[in-house]
Amino acid sequence: MKRRTGLGLGPLGLALLGLGAAGCAGPDAAGPDNALVSQAPGAGLTERLRGLNDQLDTAISGVTDLYAPLPARAGALPTLPADVARADLDPDIVRAGLQDCFAAPGQGPCNAPGVTSLLDWSTAMGPGIHGMVEDKVAQLSFLRTALAIIMERSPALVHQLAESRVQVERIIAEGYDVVESTEINPLEAARNKDAARASFQRLMKEKERFERLSARVEAEVRPLSDRALGLHQQVVASLQRFGDAP
Image 1 (cartoon, one colour):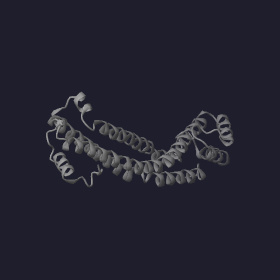
Image 2 (image 1 turned 30 degrees about the horizontal axis):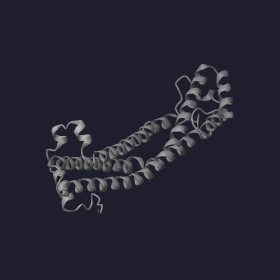
Image 3 (image 1 turned 90 degrees about the vertical axis):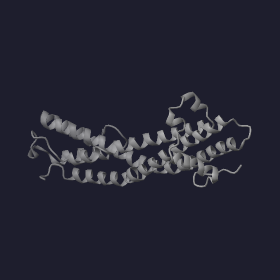
Image 4 (image 1 turned 180 degrees about the vertical axis):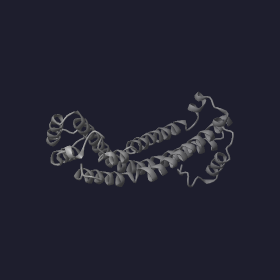
């Protein structure tokens, strides 16, 4: 049997899509029994597509939620607390330590030699400066880690979307084959044919969800690599001038 995708289903497929677009009162609309839905022909395909969509949704939210606070945090880096005077800072020690922190390899807290020297110096300078230094080091550790994750994951997610689309088209083709074989079987009970049509409609709803998620990847995730790189450059420039008058 020749498989078809949702873009070329033939008369039966067009009829099924028409039923879905018209909002026919299938099992979803009537509040179907979960056990019956899970046993419907093609139900496993819907679950596969729903699982793929759930994974994609989680990945999108993960990377966009991680990026959301970063511009504000990067913008706040040059700000000094009210109890710290710029004249009390040693620019060479402070800038070198903060730059070492942001440039440190790996993820998590930065432990570069310049950071150790900066913390030792700040301890001797009193609680106000020491607290400010600890805060800036913590902020830089978070920014460094988050930006690295985003610059790695956002392109990977765009690539994953392309691979997922191939899987989706295969699932839709399999779903059509299931409902077509049920429809043309003269020995198949009418209730099974109805269940197969309803199952296919649920499958197409998951495909619509996939298309919405795809649009989010293009609009929200794809630009994040460039935005993260821009923030990285902004932080580097801020650290080079740290302590200067605004």
